[in-house]
Image 1 (tube, rainbow, N blue to C red):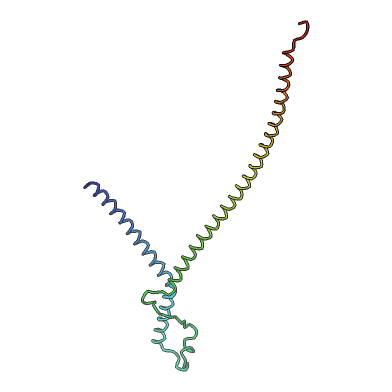
Image 2 (tube, rainbow, N blue to C red):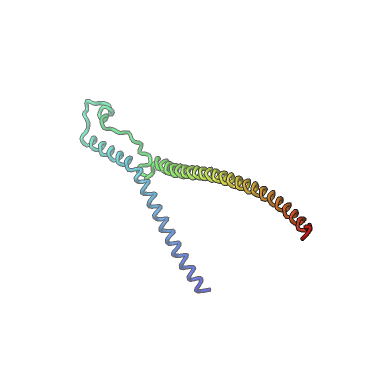
Length: 174
């Protein structure tokens, strides 16, 4: 019992290490995808902060009284909700989009396989129908040959009985 337990424990331990490494890799993959999906928003946010800092240090023309007039050429409107906290509103939608795309690909592959199976079935049904026709024709031909043979056999039986009767008749002078 002790050796079997040690062997099973060792196998289980290695198996769990592999599963945990796989889990760690998938977590890194998710994090990379999430960060990649947020990079444009972060870049635009940092650009906006840089522009605002630049304008606050240098100031803008006092003649332009409205903010839009001062910053209208390059000002971008961004909603910074969740950017600094690492949450992206679109990341969930992108994952849903990826999952939906995978689901659509699986559905399309299933439809393709179903259509291929239907084509194969129709082809096999045609071949089966052709084989049935050939077999029916052969059976019909064999039946007609058998009927002819039976009629010939009947004729031969008749001839045999007549020959036996002739053999029984004694010829005069023999």
